[in-house]
Structures are given as structure tokens and as C-alpha cells.
Length: 370
Image 1 (spheres, rainbow, N blue to C red):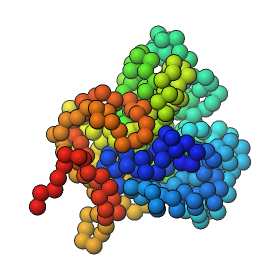
Image 2: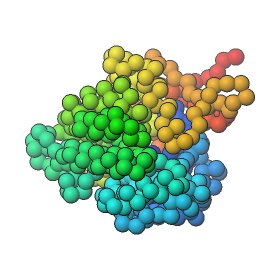
Image 3: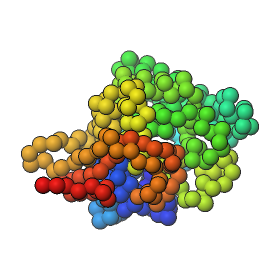
Image 4: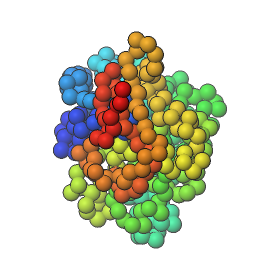
């Protein structure tokens, strides 16, 4: 998720972001480093970790950037950042376009530990695209981003990881070809994991015909064939986990013409309910599989997973699977409202979240009766 701290706290801060996470049933989160300034120095990271101890509703792990300022040209001091508490490294929001820099990052990662989480995109192919390149982009007259922009980078980095024995985690897969590239890499023994986001598992580029900027994200919504490939990959384990890619933006930033709006949507508060409604209720995905994919992600960053056991701190959420609610009707816990599911009626709602042994969220109408 993107906490926007430091530098853009008007969009999301530690309190609001983790409050939104708890409302969605999350007992802990991982925060991306594309902030202002970028989390590329140990002093910035240590300051963030201290602030999270004071202000966050649930525990927060921080990733540091792979390159300085997300510039893609100079590696950060990865060993020092790891010692300062980085759970991993990513330039999320931007790719590491230079293969030589990526190779060096994999070598340093083997020395210091921590996985490299990768936003896969070839800027020379994406260009000025604002949505998926295809029939819909042609119909609405918008510049498109081809699937190859993502898939070729997934294949490249899988090959580099195979050569170096480095660990990579591919963020927010969006297309058939990327799923195929991850499956092929796993078949060759590459230490690779991958995630998909709720919006890519539920929506397609048909939603963009409305030119509503809440459907603008990177990678973009793609076709129904791509969506089905993501669901199949989630089901069979090619895609290891679900991640929200929660990206809050101020209202005035999104309320502009589609092509001018920033990429990104919020998703922490709706992730489980949306996936339960659209995939579990109609029988597309088993509830057990969804829960597994939504709770296992921390293990790929060497974080211990919660257990429900005597003397263990409680980390759990309680959900009413039959409750129906309208997204956004009662507002959001997040500071931002750029949710692509706004106005939808969802089935299944988190009513209580306990994180690190303390109640982090309780739905207003929920009460424990002894």
C-alpha cells in the first residue's frame, strides 16, 4: 500500500491509512517508498519506523527504494537500509528499466537479504498511455499501454533472477502474458512470487468507457481474457497472493479529465468484500483459497504469519459474510475517496479487527455480547 508519508499526508497518513487497513480486516501492512522524499536513506526509514510505532493502528513494515529517488540509475545503500529495518526493496510506481542496474540490485539483494518487489513496465512501450491498448482505447480515443510493456519486463527479470539466484516478487500482475511468464519461471525453479490486485481480478477496461478517473490505474484494467487468466492463476497458485496497491489521491487530483488524472485507486477497505462478492459468492473461487491468498503475503518478505494459539498475540478479523453494504455510503476511513468500487453494493463486511493483541477497528453497529 501507499501511505503517502512523508510529504503527501493530505492524501493519506499513518493514522488514516492504517485505520483504513484495519477497516478492511488487515492486521498489518507493507508500505511503499515512493514518497516525498523517497525512502532511500536509513535516516528516513528509521524516522518512519518510529512514527509508525506512535501513530499506526496496525503494525507497518516499510520497503526502501531500489534506486535513489526512484531514478533507476544509482542503487541505494541496500545493506544499510536493510540494517535500518527495510523488509524489502522496490521502486514501485516506476520500473527498474535498466537491466544492468537490475542485475546489480539482485547481487546486492543476495548479500543483504530482503526480496525485490517489482513494478514491471517498459517505459519505451508504455509511452504516454493512460489505459490498456485495445478495442476500448481505440473507441474512446485514448493512448494505450500494451500488455507487452508489462510481460516483457516480467520475463526479463525472471531471467535475471534465475541467472543470479535472486528473489523477486512481481507486483500487480494484469495480463495473460505476465501470468504465463511467472508460471514458466516457477517451472524453471526461479525464486519468484507474484500478486494480483482486486481491481484487476474484478474489472476490465470496459469500465473505462465512462472515462471515470477512478478506473485509471497502473497497470491499467485490461480485457476479460486477462481477468480470467488472473483468476485462474490465483486459483492454481501461479499468483501467490492478493495485494491492494492502495493508492490514495486528493479529490481535486482525480476530478479532472481522464487523461490528466493520476494513476491509482484506493482498496484497503473494500478488498475482501469486493472479492468475496464477485468471486466467492458466485462460486468462481473457494472462500478458503481467497483467505489463503489474502493472508499469506507477509511470508514472502520473511515476516512470520499470525497464528491463533494460546499465548500468541491476537491478529485476526471477524467478518459477517451475509452483510450487505454500499461502498462509500458512510464515507471512508481513508483520507481519500478514489475507490473504483464506490457506490457498489457488496456482500460480506469486516466488523472487527484485532491487531497485535489490540482492537484496531470495530464496525459501529457491532457489539460483543458476553
